[in-house]
Image (cartoon, rainbow, N blue to C red; front, side):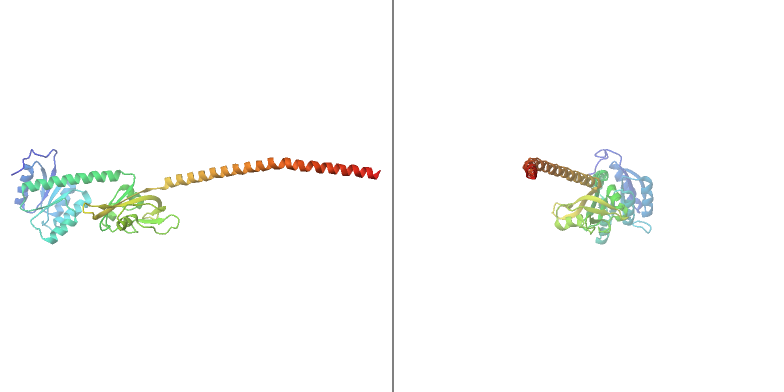
Length: 317
């Protein structure tokens, strides 16, 4: 049973079809328009797909894997996603293992086998659009955070850096994406010893728990700049209790440490003032105690001196 066009499409969804078989492309267009989608163009090569995607910025692309020209759909999809972040659903009659594995590496938003059924087509498109919307929302939240955010997959490959992380590390996401996380990318050193410190994400993987900052550490950026940072990392665990990745949050800790050091210095000064006041009190007590004794001791001595003096005068006479 088909799905009518007035069912679920609440907003205009603009689709680009990449298919080298003309009749299949036209049939697909008719099915999509019946479902309420808008097909903005049809192209038959990977090169043309990249060009039209850049020009028209569709909401989603339906991409055949086998295409005309030197570039296949998988290569085109990878370039389009890296450049434009447009979700892509593969449509193909080939389900061999090697093709599926290649396609999976590009993290597509769906995979439909020919012949295409209208119900499956609709579900695949709506699922892809909903997933893309959720991911974009999450990405906007992470970009807007005041903390640096780094996300890696289960193989420690970098998958995400937000703008704060880019600023603190000196690396852009497009430069490090899918690279293995190493100390060259994220180098932490102990503030006191200047020796290399453990990377919190790697520790989170090893210990399978959240790692919070212990000793003070510095993040060494790409250009060698050292920034005091506070950080924490936690593994990402799926429903099967398997670690699928990890996320690290970190922030510039310079101002907090300055304030902490100033407060510590002020507290030391206050304690010193208290100690000096106590010493002054002790000195005053000592003076108050010794003065009468000294006076009493000095009085008899004066009398004795006077008596000796007078006695000497008498004897002289």
